[in-house]
Length: 100
Image 1 (cartoon, rainbow, N blue to C red):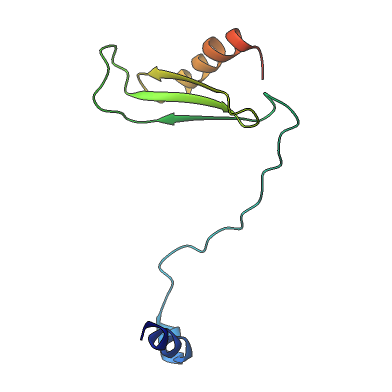
Image 2 (cartoon, rainbow, N blue to C red):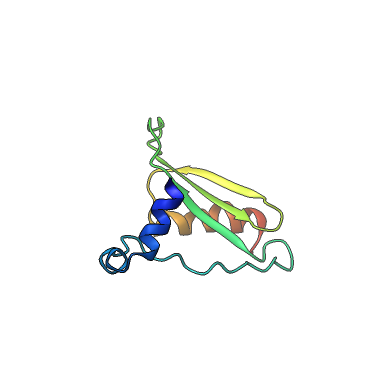
């Protein structure tokens, strides 16, 4: 029955003219080329807010993932600001593991 309804709606000119799309068309997917080595392609993101807040006031988790090796560095943080991201990148990634 659903097939019959779809066929009727697809062949009905007034139905097609009055049926406006309510969603954005999906974009074209493009594959990501594999990186040439570790620390060549990284992904960093904030997760949260997480409830309950920790005793130190942390509500978010920031993580950095190496795409090739899947190595993850994560830390609980109070906010999801650019300043927090830069401090995390410098203090918890670059000073411990070197520059990506």
